[in-house]
Amino acid sequence: MSPLSLGIGAVLALGGAYLAFIQKKKSEGVVTELKFLKATPLAELHAAWKAITEQGFSGNYREFVETNGKAATEGELRSPHGNIPCAYFVATVERQFEREETTRDEKGNVQRRRVRSSENVSSQKSASPLYLESAGIRIPLDLDGASLDLKDGSDRFEPYESNRTYSFFNAASIQTGTKTLGFRYSEKIIPLGHPLYVVGEAKDSSGELRIGSPSEKGKPFIVSVKSEDEVIKSRESGARTQFYLGIALIVAGIAVALLVK
Image: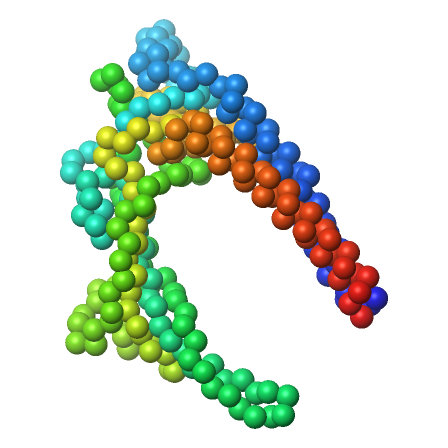
């Protein structure tokens, strides 16, 4: 044992304990809360907000809710890579390239090889507002801080063409020793009209009813193309993964502390 190995082992073990017990408990708490929440129709939320507003309490409405509806936006929105009608998108362009890597073995011999790697060169998300719509009621969603579950959109690779101009990429800035192979265009979307499961805080914002991040710390904010059951199962699986990963880190930390000299 050495002070360094003890320190590294302690960090690993503490991180594992946090994941296996504290973070897992938090995740399970969110799952339990989701199971006991009762969905409130948008029309009912809107009526409650309107009643409070008409009584002269504008700006005071605030309620943690679970609700459902369909995805809507303003105008005609299409995903940038797949041209798919959608209510929201996140799109990226990834440069895939080869770089030369030089290593030296134990005998001092120099070895060179080509290693494939990638880097993100463009990222964008839709600027159009996202709405939850049901029974003639349309409520905007403030996505800041949301846990988003999206559907896969277009995903394609295009080989690099040296005689082509790419608006998102400056060929002159390519790092020496790298060779651009091409670009992967990928996107995640919320299709227009797709059912959404939403958990968040309905609130009066400047005289308008909106759903956004809860003011109470620890409360979930979820906007998902999955059903309630699918969201709960996914989070239960995530909690189990946190536990097993945490235990693995604890074991690794103990091993490093005891065995590494």
